[in-house]
Length: 124
Image 1: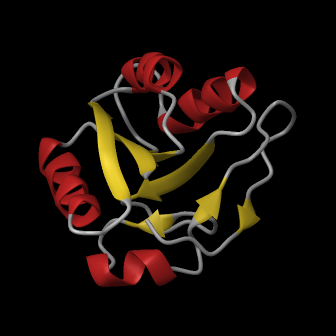
Image 2: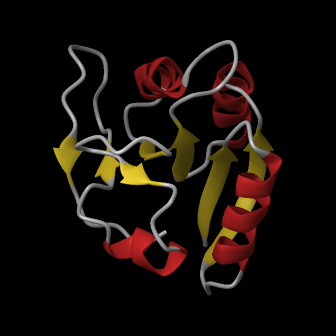
């Protein structure tokens, strides 16, 4: 079972992502965070396989939260999701059925050094 942590400051986005994940076989949402600090804490406690991370959140932003998460657990994967159209991120305004195929979805596997996103294909 693929364990997923959802981190987004918008409750409606967390609820929508949870619904999408829970409708997939072999996946479960193990937790939700409404800010970066909570995401870092829950990632350490719950040890999800994947964290779906919003970029813009209050307090600790998603990019810095991702850095901290993968520094503590280099094998943990993070998918960046944003409302901003930026290379390397999947736009929130994309139709949800396109998210798994979105060419701009990235997995951050090593943020210990300079942030270098690598394109990846993923099904969430």
